[in-house]
Image 1: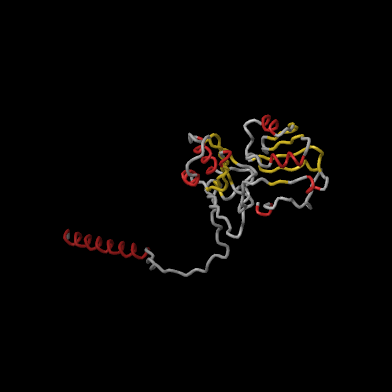
Image 2 (image 1 turned 60 degrees about the horizontal axis):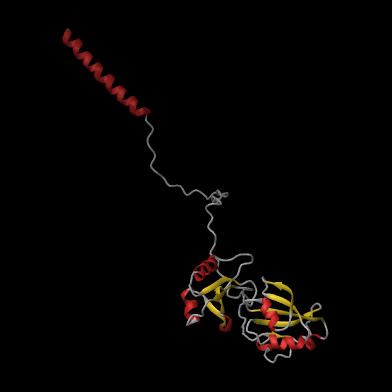
Length: 251
């Protein structure tokens, strides 16, 4: 009797275990295979992230070859003594020689072909700093108006205007003289040509003189190596005169 009960208990346990396994498998959901579905693109894709102000890199400036700059950066150099070769001097400091006036120990060198209004490039500032330390240089500074026009050919001969060229539209006995560089002594300059100083502009390197004879003064002073332009002090704008300097159109 005991064996029968033991046998029945074992059978019951087996049946119960099989039922438990069947029920466990019945509750499981079969896994779906991976399927790639080609979904239509989003009609309103998200906008790309805009870079922050610190991430924006400035574009490199490249001049348009069709554009001709209105001005360039130029440095004027005054020498204690002229170098044996101004071309080699210019090349030494990466400048371009554009004007020489050896009799007054000066030269003008282009440092940057394009001048941005109101700014001076680091190239020009470094050029001035380096050249100023050269033992043969007296002074180096940025030119503001004399040689800044690109493509212009500058010659050492002065531009001369006489009273008859202005049709009496000038102040009697006053002459304006523009200089390549200011003379060592403007008082001695005036005394040399029998004139009296009325006004001086060191910025423009110009002076107005009172003279007894305008034509005679102009003739004499125009031969001075420091003089760039000489003209009677005009009464307003005059554009219809014809200078008697035969080389005027070449300057």
